[in-house]
Image (tube, rainbow, N blue to C red):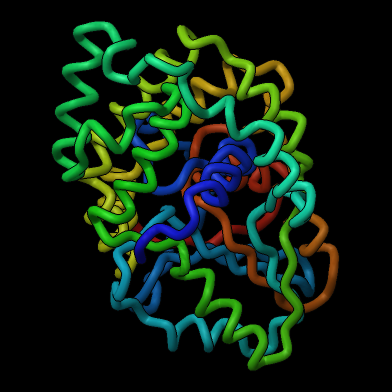
Length: 321
């Protein structure tokens, strides 16, 4: 799926830095996966799911891996079966940005995404970073002119958009099929939380050029890995191959860089895991069946959602590796 209006995707990317991982499967390998107590079961063909139970309540968790190749084949019938009898779907958190708020933000801050007149992005980079950046943009089939007036932060975000175009990645899967099936089954769905992000986005735009260049360097590493691993991660996801999902999936160096540099978004990863854990725990106190959609990173990492729910004595069944 090709990119749309870049100003709109820039704001969305800034927001996504605080709500979830950036635009696709990312570049820093998860060094330590969690080891919650899980009863391994043979799953039906299709994406991996985890089955959580407490009393008369159950939650089925669908793990996701970010952007996937447009047109990737996966077993949607299995998802339709899971939806049978479901009373609620819990979706990932979303940024709380109104149309007018977003437009005003871009109107008043758009100039902060461009370098001062006479400066160029590549001319402002150290020789090592410039060489690595040029190598990546050439692998993405992009010219120097595309990024020429970008600040390092804007270039870092634009790299992810260009990666999506290069690999024909989309974030519509599995979100759109889930939404269509939910509407057809009249199952209500909602994000587990909505995060206010405009103040944080303004703080991100205040990063010094040196801080932005450090984050651009992390983005270059993200893209370098994703060019090799994004598609294998998605293909492994489509057949529930958790071993190869873990081998190819990783979390974002760019997001970590931004979070470390901006005080107002410190702790966002912890908040994300805590909000998921709370939402699923609440669902398990409600009789009936719910479905939760969550990224593999916060779901399976050490101290992540599954480990925290296991500590609450939730019974968990999951796919064998």
